[in-house]
Image: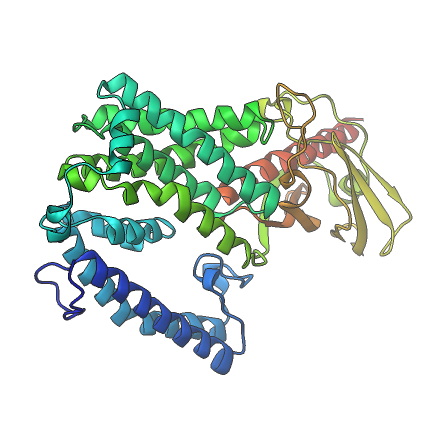
Length: 466
Protein backbone atom coordinates (compact mmCIF):
# COMPACT_ATOMS: atom_id res chain seq x y z
CA UNK A 1 0.00 0.00 0.00
CA UNK A 2 1.41 3.40 -0.94
CA UNK A 3 0.78 6.63 0.90
CA UNK A 4 1.66 9.20 -1.75
CA UNK A 5 -0.88 11.97 -1.19
CA UNK A 6 -0.97 13.16 -4.81
CA UNK A 7 -3.17 16.00 -6.08
CA UNK A 8 -6.58 15.99 -4.29
CA UNK A 9 -8.16 18.31 -6.92
CA UNK A 10 -7.57 15.98 -9.85
CA UNK A 11 -10.31 13.81 -11.33
CA UNK A 12 -7.81 11.74 -13.33
CA UNK A 13 -6.26 8.45 -12.32
CA UNK A 14 -6.79 6.50 -9.11
CA UNK A 15 -6.05 6.86 -5.44
CA UNK A 16 -5.22 4.17 -2.90
CA UNK A 17 -7.31 3.67 0.22
CA UNK A 18 -4.60 4.99 2.58
CA UNK A 19 -4.22 8.43 0.96
CA UNK A 20 -7.98 8.56 0.38
CA UNK A 21 -8.74 8.01 4.08
CA UNK A 22 -6.02 10.41 5.17
CA UNK A 23 -7.16 13.19 2.83
CA UNK A 24 -10.77 12.66 3.87
CA UNK A 25 -10.02 12.97 7.58
CA UNK A 26 -7.75 15.99 7.12
CA UNK A 27 -10.18 17.87 4.90
CA UNK A 28 -13.15 17.10 7.13
CA UNK A 29 -11.21 18.37 10.15
CA UNK A 30 -10.26 21.57 8.33
CA UNK A 31 -13.77 22.19 7.03
CA UNK A 32 -15.45 21.48 10.36
CA UNK A 33 -13.20 23.90 12.22
CA UNK A 34 -13.72 26.60 9.59
CA UNK A 35 -17.50 26.12 9.82
CA UNK A 36 -17.42 26.21 13.60
CA UNK A 37 -15.27 29.35 13.62
CA UNK A 38 -17.63 31.11 11.20
CA UNK A 39 -20.68 30.03 13.22
CA UNK A 40 -19.33 31.09 16.61
CA UNK A 41 -17.38 34.23 15.73
CA UNK A 42 -19.45 35.77 12.94
CA UNK A 43 -22.97 34.42 13.54
CA UNK A 44 -22.87 33.86 17.31
CA UNK A 45 -24.28 30.36 17.28
CA UNK A 46 -23.06 26.89 18.19
CA UNK A 47 -22.05 24.35 15.59
CA UNK A 48 -21.36 20.69 16.39
CA UNK A 49 -20.34 17.65 14.40
CA UNK A 50 -23.94 16.56 13.82
CA UNK A 51 -25.26 20.03 13.05
CA UNK A 52 -24.83 19.09 9.38
CA UNK A 53 -27.59 16.50 9.90
CA UNK A 54 -29.81 18.18 12.49
CA UNK A 55 -29.85 21.98 12.07
CA UNK A 56 -31.27 23.53 15.25
CA UNK A 57 -33.00 26.52 13.64
CA UNK A 58 -36.76 26.50 14.06
CA UNK A 59 -37.45 27.79 10.56
CA UNK A 60 -38.84 26.35 7.37
CA UNK A 61 -37.27 26.91 3.97
CA UNK A 62 -39.80 29.64 3.20
CA UNK A 63 -39.31 31.73 6.36
CA UNK A 64 -35.58 31.68 7.17
CA UNK A 65 -34.51 35.08 8.60
CA UNK A 66 -32.00 37.01 6.54
CA UNK A 67 -29.16 36.51 9.06
CA UNK A 68 -29.68 32.74 9.15
CA UNK A 69 -29.96 32.61 5.37
CA UNK A 70 -26.62 34.40 5.12
CA UNK A 71 -25.16 31.84 7.50
CA UNK A 72 -26.19 28.92 5.32
CA UNK A 73 -25.10 30.70 2.14
CA UNK A 74 -21.70 31.27 3.77
CA UNK A 75 -21.44 27.59 4.71
CA UNK A 76 -22.31 26.62 1.14
CA UNK A 77 -19.62 28.92 -0.26
CA UNK A 78 -17.07 27.43 2.13
CA UNK A 79 -18.17 23.91 1.15
CA UNK A 80 -17.72 24.30 -2.62
CA UNK A 81 -13.96 23.57 -2.83
CA UNK A 82 -14.37 20.70 -0.35
CA UNK A 83 -17.19 19.27 -2.48
CA UNK A 84 -14.92 19.47 -5.54
CA UNK A 85 -12.13 17.61 -3.75
CA UNK A 86 -14.51 15.09 -2.20
CA UNK A 87 -16.11 14.21 -5.53
CA UNK A 88 -12.74 14.03 -7.28
CA UNK A 89 -11.18 11.72 -4.73
CA UNK A 90 -14.29 9.54 -4.45
CA UNK A 91 -14.33 9.05 -8.22
CA UNK A 92 -10.65 8.11 -8.20
CA UNK A 93 -11.16 5.71 -5.29
CA UNK A 94 -14.14 4.06 -6.99
CA UNK A 95 -12.03 3.65 -10.12
CA UNK A 96 -9.21 2.17 -8.06
CA UNK A 97 -11.57 -0.30 -6.31
CA UNK A 98 -13.17 -1.27 -9.64
CA UNK A 99 -16.61 -0.04 -8.57
CA UNK A 100 -19.16 1.83 -10.75
CA UNK A 101 -18.38 5.54 -10.88
CA UNK A 102 -22.06 6.49 -10.50
CA UNK A 103 -21.79 5.50 -6.84
CA UNK A 104 -20.32 8.98 -6.36
CA UNK A 105 -23.92 10.25 -6.07
CA UNK A 106 -23.98 8.78 -2.55
CA UNK A 107 -21.34 11.35 -1.60
CA UNK A 108 -24.29 13.77 -1.32
CA UNK A 109 -26.59 11.47 0.71
CA UNK A 110 -26.44 12.21 4.47
CA UNK A 111 -25.26 9.33 6.69
CA UNK A 112 -24.83 7.02 3.69
CA UNK A 113 -21.84 9.12 2.58
CA UNK A 114 -20.16 8.41 5.92
CA UNK A 115 -20.45 4.66 5.43
CA UNK A 116 -19.36 4.99 1.80
CA UNK A 117 -16.23 6.79 2.99
CA UNK A 118 -15.51 4.04 5.52
CA UNK A 119 -16.11 1.34 2.93
CA UNK A 120 -13.80 2.94 0.35
CA UNK A 121 -11.18 3.42 3.06
CA UNK A 122 -11.25 -0.33 3.78
CA UNK A 123 -11.50 -1.91 0.34
CA UNK A 124 -8.24 -2.83 -1.43
CA UNK A 125 -7.66 -1.72 -5.00
CA UNK A 126 -7.74 -3.87 -8.11
CA UNK A 127 -3.95 -4.01 -8.00
CA UNK A 128 -2.78 -4.01 -4.42
CA UNK A 129 0.77 -5.32 -4.02
CA UNK A 130 0.28 -5.78 -0.29
CA UNK A 131 -2.48 -8.31 -0.91
CA UNK A 132 -0.44 -10.04 -3.61
CA UNK A 133 2.33 -10.71 -1.09
CA UNK A 134 -0.02 -12.08 1.57
CA UNK A 135 -0.67 -15.80 1.81
CA UNK A 136 -3.70 -16.95 -0.14
CA UNK A 137 -5.47 -18.13 3.01
CA UNK A 138 -5.61 -16.22 6.27
CA UNK A 139 -6.96 -17.20 9.67
CA UNK A 140 -10.00 -14.92 9.65
CA UNK A 141 -10.68 -15.64 6.00
CA UNK A 142 -10.51 -19.37 6.69
CA UNK A 143 -13.12 -18.86 9.37
CA UNK A 144 -15.39 -16.95 7.00
CA UNK A 145 -14.92 -19.61 4.31
CA UNK A 146 -15.97 -22.25 6.81
CA UNK A 147 -18.94 -20.35 8.32
CA UNK A 148 -20.49 -19.08 5.08
CA UNK A 149 -21.90 -21.89 2.87
CA UNK A 150 -21.46 -21.78 -0.87
CA UNK A 151 -25.12 -22.65 -1.46
CA UNK A 152 -27.24 -19.52 -2.11
CA UNK A 153 -29.87 -20.43 0.50
CA UNK A 154 -27.24 -21.22 3.10
CA UNK A 155 -25.23 -18.03 2.47
CA UNK A 156 -28.43 -15.95 2.59
CA UNK A 157 -29.40 -17.61 5.88
CA UNK A 158 -26.00 -16.85 7.40
CA UNK A 159 -26.29 -13.24 6.24
CA UNK A 160 -29.65 -12.92 7.98
CA UNK A 161 -28.45 -14.66 11.14
CA UNK A 162 -25.38 -12.45 11.41
CA UNK A 163 -27.02 -9.08 10.72
CA UNK A 164 -30.17 -9.54 12.82
CA UNK A 165 -28.62 -9.80 16.33
CA UNK A 166 -26.10 -7.08 15.54
CA UNK A 167 -28.88 -4.76 14.33
CA UNK A 168 -30.98 -5.48 17.42
CA UNK A 169 -27.95 -4.69 19.58
CA UNK A 170 -27.38 -1.36 17.83
CA UNK A 171 -31.09 -0.53 18.23
CA UNK A 172 -30.94 -1.25 21.95
CA UNK A 173 -27.82 0.92 22.20
CA UNK A 174 -29.49 3.83 20.40
CA UNK A 175 -32.89 3.56 22.10
CA UNK A 176 -32.19 2.38 25.63
CA UNK A 177 -28.72 3.80 26.24
CA UNK A 178 -28.98 7.10 24.33
CA UNK A 179 -32.76 7.62 23.96
CA UNK A 180 -32.02 8.54 20.36
CA UNK A 181 -34.28 7.94 17.35
CA UNK A 182 -32.32 9.58 14.58
CA UNK A 183 -30.23 9.11 11.44
CA UNK A 184 -28.13 6.27 12.79
CA UNK A 185 -31.20 4.22 13.66
CA UNK A 186 -33.43 4.94 10.67
CA UNK A 187 -30.84 5.35 7.89
CA UNK A 188 -27.48 3.98 9.03
CA UNK A 189 -28.88 0.76 10.48
CA UNK A 190 -31.01 -0.31 7.45
CA UNK A 191 -28.17 0.59 5.09
CA UNK A 192 -25.65 -1.56 6.99
CA UNK A 193 -28.14 -4.43 7.33
CA UNK A 194 -28.77 -4.53 3.57
CA UNK A 195 -25.12 -4.02 2.72
CA UNK A 196 -23.71 -6.65 5.07
CA UNK A 197 -26.35 -9.30 4.41
CA UNK A 198 -25.75 -9.06 0.64
CA UNK A 199 -21.97 -9.17 1.06
CA UNK A 200 -22.28 -12.39 3.05
CA UNK A 201 -24.81 -13.75 0.54
CA UNK A 202 -22.36 -13.12 -2.32
CA UNK A 203 -19.23 -14.10 -0.41
CA UNK A 204 -18.32 -17.19 -2.47
CA UNK A 205 -19.66 -16.15 -5.88
CA UNK A 206 -21.61 -13.26 -7.47
CA UNK A 207 -25.38 -13.43 -6.99
CA UNK A 208 -28.12 -11.86 -9.21
CA UNK A 209 -29.32 -8.37 -8.40
CA UNK A 210 -32.91 -9.49 -7.81
CA UNK A 211 -31.98 -12.05 -5.16
CA UNK A 212 -29.54 -9.59 -3.56
CA UNK A 213 -32.34 -7.05 -3.14
CA UNK A 214 -34.63 -9.78 -1.81
CA UNK A 215 -32.01 -10.72 0.80
CA UNK A 216 -31.57 -7.05 1.79
CA UNK A 217 -35.32 -6.54 2.27
CA UNK A 218 -35.74 -9.88 4.04
CA UNK A 219 -32.91 -8.93 6.39
CA UNK A 220 -34.58 -5.67 7.47
CA UNK A 221 -37.94 -7.44 7.84
CA UNK A 222 -36.27 -10.01 10.09
CA UNK A 223 -34.74 -7.21 12.16
CA UNK A 224 -38.21 -5.67 12.58
CA UNK A 225 -39.68 -9.01 13.67
CA UNK A 226 -36.83 -9.46 16.13
CA UNK A 227 -37.44 -6.00 17.62
CA UNK A 228 -41.10 -6.93 17.98
CA UNK A 229 -40.21 -10.28 19.55
CA UNK A 230 -37.93 -8.75 22.21
CA UNK A 231 -40.52 -6.03 22.98
CA UNK A 232 -38.31 -3.13 21.92
CA UNK A 233 -40.94 -1.71 19.56
CA UNK A 234 -44.59 -2.20 18.68
CA UNK A 235 -46.25 -3.04 15.40
CA UNK A 236 -47.42 0.49 14.52
CA UNK A 237 -44.04 2.21 14.87
CA UNK A 238 -42.33 -0.58 12.95
CA UNK A 239 -44.88 -0.23 10.14
CA UNK A 240 -44.28 3.53 10.02
CA UNK A 241 -40.53 3.04 9.77
CA UNK A 242 -40.82 0.18 7.25
CA UNK A 243 -40.99 2.19 3.96
CA UNK A 244 -37.85 4.20 4.77
CA UNK A 245 -36.03 1.17 6.17
CA UNK A 246 -36.85 -0.96 3.12
CA UNK A 247 -35.62 1.66 0.63
CA UNK A 248 -32.38 2.33 2.52
CA UNK A 249 -31.78 -1.40 3.04
CA UNK A 250 -32.13 -1.96 -0.70
CA UNK A 251 -29.68 0.90 -1.27
CA UNK A 252 -27.18 -0.93 0.94
CA UNK A 253 -28.01 -4.11 -0.95
CA UNK A 254 -27.25 -2.46 -4.31
CA UNK A 255 -23.83 -1.37 -3.10
CA UNK A 256 -23.21 -4.83 -1.67
CA UNK A 257 -24.25 -6.33 -5.02
CA UNK A 258 -21.81 -4.12 -6.94
CA UNK A 259 -18.98 -5.04 -4.60
CA UNK A 260 -19.65 -8.78 -4.77
CA UNK A 261 -19.48 -8.55 -8.58
CA UNK A 262 -15.96 -7.11 -8.35
CA UNK A 263 -12.62 -8.72 -7.46
CA UNK A 264 -13.16 -11.59 -5.02
CA UNK A 265 -10.25 -10.58 -2.78
CA UNK A 266 -12.00 -7.24 -2.14
CA UNK A 267 -15.07 -9.10 -0.94
CA UNK A 268 -13.06 -11.49 1.22
CA UNK A 269 -11.28 -8.71 3.10
CA UNK A 270 -12.47 -9.13 6.70
CA UNK A 271 -12.20 -5.38 7.28
CA UNK A 272 -15.12 -4.81 4.90
CA UNK A 273 -17.43 -6.70 7.28
CA UNK A 274 -16.57 -4.40 10.17
CA UNK A 275 -18.96 -1.75 8.83
CA UNK A 276 -21.92 -2.98 10.86
CA UNK A 277 -19.88 -4.27 13.78
CA UNK A 278 -17.89 -1.11 14.55
CA UNK A 279 -18.81 1.86 12.35
CA UNK A 280 -22.54 1.94 13.08
CA UNK A 281 -22.34 1.73 16.91
CA UNK A 282 -19.67 4.44 16.81
CA UNK A 283 -21.86 6.67 14.67
CA UNK A 284 -24.89 6.14 16.94
CA UNK A 285 -22.80 6.95 20.01
CA UNK A 286 -21.38 10.15 18.52
CA UNK A 287 -24.80 11.19 17.20
CA UNK A 288 -26.30 10.95 20.69
CA UNK A 289 -23.86 13.60 21.94
CA UNK A 290 -25.35 16.24 19.66
CA UNK A 291 -29.11 15.88 19.96
CA UNK A 292 -30.52 19.22 18.86
CA UNK A 293 -33.88 20.85 19.41
CA UNK A 294 -36.11 20.20 16.38
CA UNK A 295 -37.86 23.11 14.73
CA UNK A 296 -41.45 24.03 15.53
CA UNK A 297 -43.84 22.53 12.97
CA UNK A 298 -47.37 23.61 12.08
CA UNK A 299 -50.31 21.43 11.04
CA UNK A 300 -53.56 23.10 9.98
CA UNK A 301 -56.97 21.67 8.99
CA UNK A 302 -60.17 23.41 7.90
CA UNK A 303 -63.90 22.76 7.61
CA UNK A 304 -66.82 24.99 6.59
CA UNK A 305 -69.82 24.94 8.95
CA UNK A 306 -73.33 25.96 7.96
CA UNK A 307 -73.79 28.12 11.07
CA UNK A 308 -72.60 31.57 12.24
CA UNK A 309 -69.47 31.86 14.47
CA UNK A 310 -71.63 32.73 17.52
CA UNK A 311 -73.28 29.32 17.34
CA UNK A 312 -70.04 27.47 16.62
CA UNK A 313 -67.99 29.08 19.40
CA UNK A 314 -69.47 27.18 22.40
CA UNK A 315 -68.80 23.85 20.64
CA UNK A 316 -65.17 24.88 20.10
CA UNK A 317 -64.56 25.80 23.73
CA UNK A 318 -65.91 22.46 24.97
CA UNK A 319 -67.64 19.65 23.13
CA UNK A 320 -69.52 16.52 24.09
CA UNK A 321 -68.24 12.99 23.72
CA UNK A 322 -67.48 11.87 20.19
CA UNK A 323 -68.71 8.54 18.83
CA UNK A 324 -66.19 5.69 18.67
CA UNK A 325 -63.77 6.12 15.77
CA UNK A 326 -64.32 4.33 12.50
CA UNK A 327 -60.91 5.18 11.00
CA UNK A 328 -58.42 2.31 10.81
CA UNK A 329 -55.67 4.63 12.04
CA UNK A 330 -57.30 5.06 15.45
CA UNK A 331 -58.28 1.42 15.73
CA UNK A 332 -54.61 0.48 15.58
CA UNK A 333 -53.88 2.29 18.83
CA UNK A 334 -53.06 5.87 17.76
CA UNK A 335 -54.49 8.27 20.35
CA UNK A 336 -57.76 9.95 19.34
CA UNK A 337 -59.87 12.74 20.91
CA UNK A 338 -62.95 11.82 22.95
CA UNK A 339 -64.27 15.09 24.43
CA UNK A 340 -63.19 18.56 25.58
CA UNK A 341 -63.83 20.16 28.97
CA UNK A 342 -62.98 23.60 30.35
CA UNK A 343 -62.72 25.17 33.79
CA UNK A 344 -63.19 28.91 33.85
CA UNK A 345 -63.64 31.45 31.09
CA UNK A 346 -61.30 33.79 29.27
CA UNK A 347 -57.48 33.86 29.40
CA UNK A 348 -56.21 31.73 32.26
CA UNK A 349 -59.01 29.17 31.99
CA UNK A 350 -57.78 25.58 31.60
CA UNK A 351 -59.13 23.37 28.86
CA UNK A 352 -58.72 19.59 28.89
CA UNK A 353 -58.96 17.74 25.60
CA UNK A 354 -59.45 14.13 26.63
CA UNK A 355 -57.89 11.51 24.35
CA UNK A 356 -58.01 7.73 24.40
CA UNK A 357 -54.62 7.69 26.17
CA UNK A 358 -55.22 10.59 28.59
CA UNK A 359 -55.81 14.34 28.56
CA UNK A 360 -54.03 17.32 27.02
CA UNK A 361 -53.79 20.22 29.49
CA UNK A 362 -54.39 23.46 27.57
CA UNK A 363 -54.23 26.81 29.44
CA UNK A 364 -56.08 29.46 27.43
CA UNK A 365 -53.89 32.33 26.21
CA UNK A 366 -56.26 34.15 23.81
CA UNK A 367 -60.05 34.25 24.27
CA UNK A 368 -61.42 36.42 21.48
CA UNK A 369 -65.08 35.32 21.34
CA UNK A 370 -66.31 34.29 18.77
CA UNK A 371 -63.18 34.56 16.63
CA UNK A 372 -60.08 33.00 18.17
CA UNK A 373 -59.34 30.50 20.93
CA UNK A 374 -55.60 29.98 21.41
CA UNK A 375 -53.91 27.86 24.06
CA UNK A 376 -50.57 26.43 25.09
CA UNK A 377 -50.02 22.77 25.98
CA UNK A 378 -48.51 22.05 29.39
CA UNK A 379 -49.27 18.35 29.61
CA UNK A 380 -50.05 15.59 27.16
CA UNK A 381 -50.71 11.84 27.18
CA UNK A 382 -48.79 9.14 25.25
CA UNK A 383 -49.12 9.32 21.48
CA UNK A 384 -50.58 5.82 21.20
CA UNK A 385 -51.18 2.44 22.75
CA UNK A 386 -48.57 0.28 21.03
CA UNK A 387 -49.73 -2.99 19.51
CA UNK A 388 -47.52 -5.83 20.69
CA UNK A 389 -47.81 -9.54 21.44
CA UNK A 390 -46.73 -8.64 24.97
CA UNK A 391 -49.54 -6.19 25.68
CA UNK A 392 -48.76 -2.72 26.98
CA UNK A 393 -45.16 -2.04 26.02
CA UNK A 394 -44.09 1.58 26.38
CA UNK A 395 -41.14 2.70 24.22
CA UNK A 396 -39.65 6.01 25.33
CA UNK A 397 -40.69 7.79 22.15
CA UNK A 398 -44.38 7.55 23.10
CA UNK A 399 -43.99 10.27 25.73
CA UNK A 400 -41.79 12.97 24.27
CA UNK A 401 -40.84 12.45 20.64
CA UNK A 402 -43.93 14.11 19.16
CA UNK A 403 -44.81 16.89 21.57
CA UNK A 404 -47.53 19.51 21.08
CA UNK A 405 -46.65 23.00 22.29
CA UNK A 406 -49.69 25.09 21.33
CA UNK A 407 -52.91 25.09 19.36
CA UNK A 408 -55.77 27.31 18.28
CA UNK A 409 -59.22 27.43 16.72
CA UNK A 410 -59.85 30.31 14.33
CA UNK A 411 -63.44 31.09 13.31
CA UNK A 412 -63.85 33.15 10.12
CA UNK A 413 -67.28 34.53 9.20
CA UNK A 414 -67.92 33.96 5.49
CA UNK A 415 -70.08 36.25 3.31
CA UNK A 416 -72.92 33.71 3.11
CA UNK A 417 -73.23 33.54 6.91
CA UNK A 418 -71.34 30.27 7.32
CA UNK A 419 -68.13 29.78 9.30
CA UNK A 420 -64.73 28.57 8.22
CA UNK A 421 -63.24 26.79 11.23
CA UNK A 422 -59.47 26.31 11.21
CA UNK A 423 -57.72 24.07 13.71
CA UNK A 424 -53.95 24.48 14.11
CA UNK A 425 -51.40 22.56 16.14
CA UNK A 426 -47.79 23.62 16.70
CA UNK A 427 -45.56 20.72 17.64
CA UNK A 428 -42.02 19.34 17.61
CA UNK A 429 -41.08 16.00 16.12
CA UNK A 430 -37.88 14.53 17.55
CA UNK A 431 -37.55 11.71 15.04
CA UNK A 432 -35.00 12.06 12.24
CA UNK A 433 -34.93 12.36 9.26
CA UNK A 434 -37.45 15.10 9.95
CA UNK A 435 -38.94 15.19 6.43
CA UNK A 436 -39.91 11.53 6.60
CA UNK A 437 -41.44 11.56 10.07
CA UNK A 438 -43.16 14.90 9.52
CA UNK A 439 -45.16 13.28 6.72
CA UNK A 440 -46.46 10.75 9.25
CA UNK A 441 -47.04 13.23 12.09
CA UNK A 442 -48.82 15.75 9.83
CA UNK A 443 -51.09 12.99 8.56
CA UNK A 444 -51.95 11.81 12.09
CA UNK A 445 -52.57 15.34 13.39
CA UNK A 446 -54.71 16.15 10.36
CA UNK A 447 -56.88 13.07 11.04
CA UNK A 448 -57.21 14.14 14.69
CA UNK A 449 -58.16 17.65 13.62
CA UNK A 450 -60.82 16.40 11.23
CA UNK A 451 -62.32 14.12 13.87
CA UNK A 452 -62.79 17.15 16.16
CA UNK A 453 -63.75 19.68 13.48
CA UNK A 454 -66.34 17.43 11.88
CA UNK A 455 -67.83 16.72 15.32
CA UNK A 456 -68.10 20.47 15.99
CA UNK A 457 -69.64 20.86 12.53
CA UNK A 458 -72.31 18.23 13.25
CA UNK A 459 -73.16 19.76 16.65
CA UNK A 460 -73.35 23.30 15.27
CA UNK A 461 -75.40 22.42 12.21
CA UNK A 462 -77.82 20.30 14.22
CA UNK A 463 -78.55 23.43 16.28
CA UNK A 464 -79.31 25.34 13.06
CA UNK A 465 -81.91 22.75 12.14
CA UNK A 466 -83.53 23.06 15.57
